[in-house]
Amino acid sequence: MSSDDRPNDRVPSVFRFATELVAWVATPWALAPHSVALAALSVVVLIGLPTVFATPGDKRNVLVAVPGYVTIALVVLQLVAAVAASWAAWPAAAAVAVSVLAAVSTVLELPRWRRLISR
Image (cartoon, rainbow, N blue to C red; front, side, top):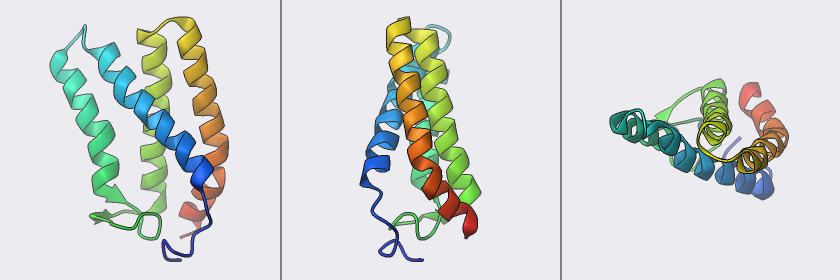
């Protein structure tokens, strides 16, 4: 299946991207009081890995091709980072909102994950 053949997944993509943004902000925010270097490294990992590694057919431009389960693992890393870091760094109300966002994103990602595993 080419990337042009895949189903329209705009809504799940919006939720996934929103969760990624939270991970990119909350993770260094939570880590900075302990280690600025670790906070900077977290951003490199959370943004860099999914940029470099992708499953052919899931993304138009693939730098390093990986199986679908690797792409799924990278998304799960973002989801876990967003939730854990928000609970560590932010007030409970914000962390609850992030947890709900991550849960909705996970449910919306399931069809994509099934496609990625079936390759």
